[in-house]
Image: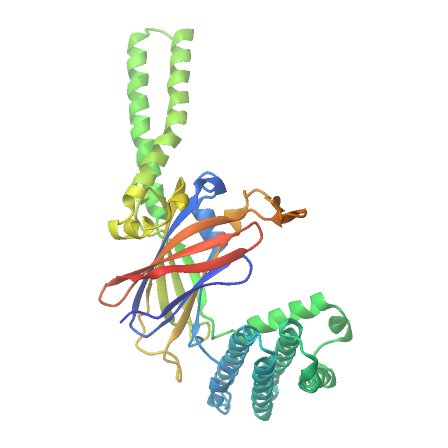
Amino acid sequence: MHHHISFKQDEGLRLQISQSLLPKSHSLVELYLCIPNEMGINPNTLSEESFYHNHVKTRMAYNASGIHLPLVRSRFISKNRGDEQDYRQNLNLYCYQVRLALDTDVNEALAIKEPDAFFIRVQAMQQETERLLKRLRRYKPKEEKLLSFFYNADNFLSWHAEQVILKLLDKGPKSSEHAVERKQLLQFCEAENGYREQKRYNSVSTVDDPNRLANKMHLLQRLIEHGVVLRRETRNLNTLLRRFVKGSVTAIMMAFVMLLVLTARTNFTQVTIGLVALLGTIYGLREIFKEDITRIIWRRIIMGRAKWLQSFYNSTTKVKVAKQKVWLEYIKPTRIPKEIAAIFSKRRQQNKQAAQWMYMRFECDVPVNTFMPGYDALHQSINISMAPMVRYLRKGEGRVYEYSGKKIRKHAVERRYQINVVLVTRDDNHEAQAQRYKITLNRSQIVALEKIGSPSA
């Protein structure tokens, strides 16, 4: 079976590949990017290591995909008596899922442009959120040592729920016919705000400063992700190999230089200016060529090899839950498989311009037999930022003129660029499925991510 995978644009200049992983599963995702030369991206302006470490992030969490508010399970919040770690784990899972479900439902509600349907959806969301908050508060622990966990979770969820409703009212369709519904939603926000004030969760100085408040909530969000979002450790797979290559090249160069030095000494019976000059030249040439030869040999050896290994651990139990190997390199067109090249060749003629090719591959293994109780899947999300790709783009605010028969009009236009991508996924039987996408971007955002054609097996 093919692992269900989604490829979508995230906020700003980010792309996100996400999928669910089962215990004992293996997943392979490949990306071929065709980046036009006019964007100024090449190994000299954007190194593979820099791009990977700064702009490619993999995140894994328990069973967090496709969750909507009504699906958040109530039993996670019920506390196991006396076990602090279990209570915190259950509480965090519950809060994480409520937050994720809220974010999912917000995006779907904002896609509704018709006011009646929009307000029905938002009211249902608000009622469901209220019910989930009440459930959380019903299980307030009596033990002193557990209260701080509860207060953090209650504070964050109350604030996040209020923010979500206000965002919907600000960005959603406006209609004077829905004043009553709007008032009810704002009353919910006021009630949650009043609740946090009554509980003295946040100091007056924090509430009065939006930056301080947002940063505090971000910190609380990180705290409630403990044990749910897996801890990541990254290791470079080729560090020892690189040292070996560098050492070997140095040894060979030294042997060659010593040979030249000994030959020079036999030809010069005594130390002269000529001998000193010759020895200086030999050592100078060694320094010049050592770096170049090392780089050429290294690029040849590293070609096609995995570069990084990411291990994901449960931050509570310290058990390794998943591991991911990552490939990322610039490649020549001749190294692109025929079936992938055939998909790229279907582009229109004007899109076939001189380009750099980049290859990414993410190979993931889940070695464990089972996950935590109540969870049967991992959610993997790979975030790729296009920010370094637009660094060298021209500002490109231009004008297009139009004559309508009466007067001349001018329209402001922006410069846009297109990156073609083929996403390849392989199932457990190693059968590949490839899909082409077109990314349209300007200097500040991804304008569109379009699926082109149907998947080809």
